[in-house]
Amino acid sequence: MARRAARSRVQRRIARRQAVFLATTCACLLLFVAIVFLATAPRAGDGETITGGEVAVPGEAQSTASDTAPPGVVSLCLGGEVTFALGMEEYVARSGAAYPWGEIAALLKRYDFTVVNLEGPLCRPGPCNPDQPSSPMRADAACAAPMAEAGIDAVCLANDHAMDYGSQGLEHTLNVLHGVGISSVGAGSALQGAEQPLVLKGKDGTTLALLSFCDVAPASYAAGDAAPGIAAADPARMGEAVRKAAAESPYVVVFLHWGEQGAAEVGDRQRELAALCAQAGADLVVGCHPHVVQGAEMIAGTPVFYSLGNLVFAAQSEEGKRGILLGCRFAGGKLAGIEVFPVLVEEGRPSLLPREQAEAFLGTFAALSPGIPLAIAGGSGSILLEKGTGD
Image 1 (spheres, helix red, strand yellow):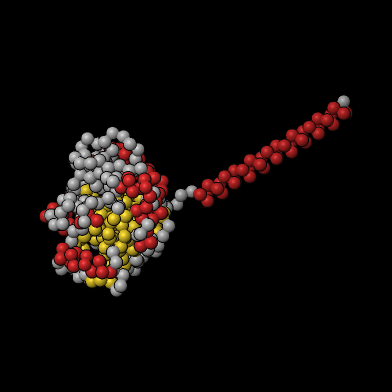
Image 2: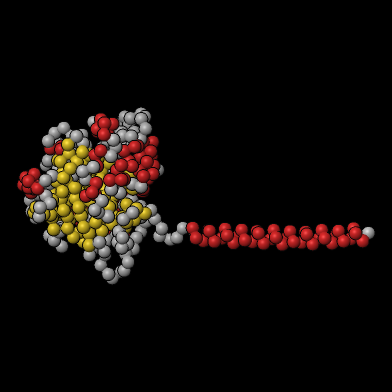
């Protein structure tokens, strides 16, 4: 009996020790989980980030560092038409997807952000959109990563080829771009998202809102209230979107797909839409779609570059082998200056023009741009437009 009682007491002591051990272990685990949760929980204002600056969630309101101090500096490079279809497939197959960017990547990386117009989805083969009136464009998803490595931070998708392979092609493109760290603007799963600006946030927190609209796509390409598509250039909606962006960001750039293919002359509709954007608060308006360089002009103090021409494109005509890159500097609440880099596109690969050819290009471009003060910049072969007119 005595041995049985002693054994019972030992068993009770062991049970108590096990209970204490289990309770202590559970408490430690709960404390560890709480610490991890607090350390990793999202904070207000967090957004997507890209090295060299931040890309905020589209449509998210941003605030400047101070309500009284002037906005800081943001640099932006803008390029024209980029497609890996219509003959570019041969160059990519022969030399690799990084081939087009070799001559200009160093320039693109000088800026906080670089944005181009991407024509044609990056998606798997599938049924073409029957509403596409010309040649549908499509390229392999493998073309995306070299774009990002070359310095492309975002692409404009409001154009007449973004929906060439329907909503599935658009969705695949958005996923591919997101996967390599390239943001997009001008298309989305519904109208609200397609019209939202892409808010670019510089190193000091200063924001620039970028909007993208298309005036030349089939009507069925436009996004609906609950249907995927692109942002159509409806004047009333576009004007309101620009005004809202200007109220939330100190700098606003509008990228428009408009005009007539192959035409060096600017159309009345282009000027109407440009004036609407300028009056709504845009600091800069640029365009694509003609696939040739068109002139520039100042509207209500806002520079308008009607067509940047081609950048990565298998152009056949001499006019189609010309394009321009815009190097823009925003500071102190205004567009402080623009540097225009003439580009020659040979076998789909852009390169900067040397000084002698740049001077010849200047004569042509100046003739297309009456009233715009342009001058060759030193020995670089670029063209300067110092923003002062209309300030």
